[in-house]
Length: 231
Image (cartoon, rainbow, N blue to C red; front, side, top):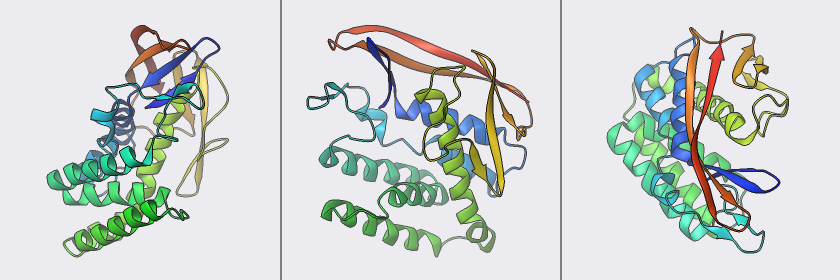
């Protein structure tokens, strides 16, 4: 779950819905990745692991707020992530490798035994998938992984921040860097965003479903965040 905090409530965005929006960014990026379809599939489905978990709001009693993807219990998170990568890899091995790289990278400096085991298992998975790739796929693998992280960051930006604000979340404070270019988010109004410089081939709309829950844990409403990305 992606959690945006307000004074009296929390906005909850399911992570698979966020990933689908990341896929919309990838689909319309002017400089298309190669291989195109596999890379876009990976980006749009990189959080498939959370599709089932996010149907239920799990409450963090210590912090008195819903658990987010940042602090979700490891005994639930790691098996879900592994299953999610399995599903993507079964559909498209190249996409599965990108998703595996994405989750393993989060744990690069972890010293927890269960996270080390997960990371090492994913590195092994990546090796078994890479031996089946073409030369072009291998050449572009690291670039496409960085592209996944970029699109992930752009979508997180929309979910974590109120429209019209100037802040951007990690790992892209102050902008979104890719291939030596820093793309700055510019709000034209509270529903219209552009990146400077513009990397997109066309303008497009975005719809992100979300739920609102009160600090008393009472569900308040369900709605759709509607935004437009311009060139």
